[in-house]
Length: 342
Ligand code: FES
View (cartoon, helix red, strand yellow):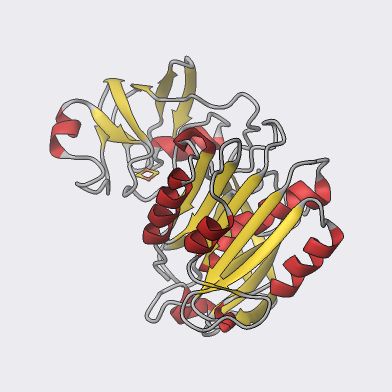
């Protein structure tokens, strides 16, 4: 008989049933109880909580994200922790009240588009078996077909109003199980997939006053920003201004340039777009350098702005420094970095 345990989440006082084999984070997100998280794979430490009562198995938590002394002090990572008894945890649930929480659900999807859009980057559009609710900027987990439970997390590039077809933008990684071994090899339109979501807290904070926004995206880190831009401009009554910098090594590493240029023309008072190339001389209409350096050339001071950034860990670290050099406070900077496992 499979065992379920009850996790009590303090300070919310919410009780959640955790099925055997399920992690605390998965059970809570599926029950609509928000807990902080980012990577969901035991490496970023965003989901660290205190275990006040009961026992957990720490699972695959990396020893860097959860050090030995922290385990002894009663900390755990909810994305890896499986209860061994009923458990009470204390989480830092400073959830913005305005953030709408969409419980994580399972979906079956069908590939409806799989096209090359740039060097080693494909657009993958999946029609879901029913509508999904999510915040612009969130991501889903896609089960890699033919593997034993391997999944990959990809951000939606479509706005939440397009809720039956989700779009991902995926870069190939040589040797990667999900990309080289499947998506760039033999995946095809019509294939069926299992997905779950939405996850993540890198979301467009539309409930805050309409402050101007700077967005910095590296490579496929553009995807969640694309969702946010479409949501803010096309579907929302947002009166602020967004400046988007999209970076790649060369022009051929960038995608959807014409789409964003078109948006620029449609919303001249609200949107500016700068495609940036770091490894070649920029052609007309492109800027030369990393997104952070180009942004620094354009702005001396960003007081009163919000900054959003997404890309590799090194890129995001560089962007954070750039934002702070322009007097943006950490509380106004929102970022997501990802290591592309392929
Ligand atoms: Fe990243 Fe748990 S360690 S979400």
